[in-house]
Image (cartoon, rainbow, N blue to C red; front, side):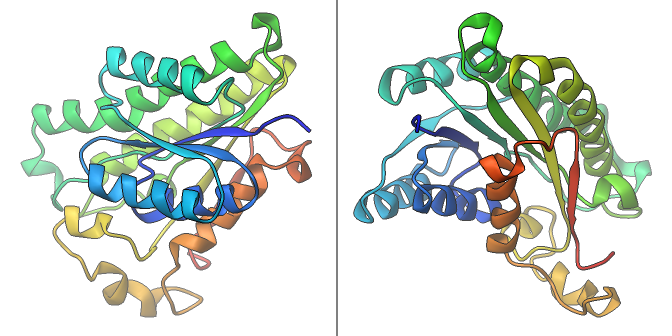
Length: 249
């Protein structure tokens, strides 16, 4: 069985952290991509290593092309040929209606949430595609239930960025299916993560959970298990698909 080498962008907290730990437990060699929180990223790495796994942390702002390229080259050197990518890194800005959204805010958010995922997928495909000498692989994009719900009065720009990720997932899945690469997405919603604090409401899940059919928020580990399955051989005939994890919303 070939080595499974997987990059998780934004792997230092929340869903990314839970995913990195779950993948390492299943034998993946993991790279924790992070932008700022080096201490948190290294804590994940040390936890994996302490359990006998293999992990590295690489700092990169995925909105910057040169940094993305450098990150993938470091993975090549330190781990080997990539077999999996979890496009998880994204940013959320304080809650806002459309009237207060600036072009600068849009540019910053779309550069990370959309362009960053495109750039990481580009570099992954260059390494995984059969025509480039690769052995195939799997990409999982972390979208959001907001792409379906629109996040009115709160995050319409974030929701739009995730709508782009949905379309990207569908198109890329068809484009690279013949190259041995599967591309799928998860759409979490109302998950207990630190990201809500970035939006200015750390307890948002507590506020909305009663309106959900399941009457509770989700845990990062529940999303991680869905990602783990999509990356696994058990999902070998699944591509261009979406798994919704939003408590029935």
